[in-house]
Image 1 (cartoon, protein in one colour):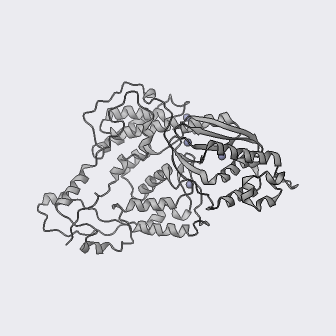
Image 2: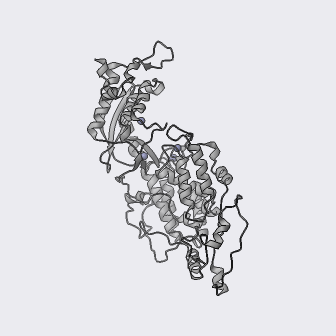
Image 3: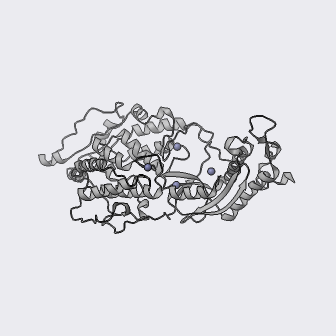
Length: 493
Ligand SMILES: [Zn+2]
Ligand SMILES: [Zn+2]
Ligand SMILES: [Zn+2]
Ligand SMILES: [Zn+2]
């Protein structure tokens, strides 16, 4: 008979706790004044029980799914969430009772289609990604580009139901589903990672106490613990880095307490940063203490410095790393750039579109060849706000005052559709999607082109209607979109 050892140890929820859900890249910029020994790079050891069971399983040659005789039993996963316990065959080669006890072979566990759909609230068909501004309300629908999107999602749920929750197949299947069940803003990057963590916890709940610690320390937030003010990208990152340290040093309760004070101070806006919540800190320490001995590794030899004032534990430093980015997809699934531009040109001007303002181009450090094109009523306020939220130095390169500023921006975005990307921001834990990988000259020329068209040809009017909404005067410009895109002023001369 074919004998294999398990390709991976069974996944235990404790591993999910010690693995930070934030990318380590965030830890790269702001540096503690005196680096504690294990700030970066050191990963908590795996739970020893797993190691033992893996070794034992190998030593005793216990068959797993995939070997002939046993696998047949799993071909059709049971429909109920918890299949009845199966007794594994006792093997001749198992020599001692002690060894047998140390073997923890997890029963394959499957989730039914219904369980998955219910727990993840699939029937709502809303993206649901958690951003800085709450949960995303984008509706997941069939589009021209993906006419069978909902069918596809249903088949991905079926795939997931066929994956043993403790097997290596489970996470990739969950990720495929999460990607599909996300809007164009949230199908990748940091927000997708957060969704995956959230979904995994819903489907395979962590133990209560782990869940509470994680919820308390890991829930990414851009808002103050006390009020609704934004705390700024610097503190968002400080919190994430402190959470990492807490979990790495969970064996040292004194240091953890100190770190939790650092975390608490960084979770507040300027107005509330002086306050501290000792009761909350004590609660968290107690929770960590309860699981430290069983779940987390404890470094006995460490002697971390706790003399620094809480407020200045982290040095402030703006991010300069390159954004992770991906190509931007049109939210309606349209792929023809000329059609995208056409629908922007012919859409009526309503509300915000009717206001004048500034269209601008700016860049941030560490991202050559990438430019943000946007519009605002107040250039300097916009720039400062962005620097605060995203914790990056942001340089305004070009701007122009125009009527219908939002529409001029939209025309530029549509014109440069093929250069458009979305970038993942570690500072405000969200994706920004008005970025373009293009030369500065081309970005300026495009902005000038549509600004000029708006100013000089005055292409929209109310058609005498009382609503105040404005409509494209001359629809014949749409007849030859290629020529119109090249030079919208040609017809006006
Ligand atoms: Zn979304
Ligand atoms: Zn506050
Ligand atoms: Zn904008
Ligand atoms: Zn940002």
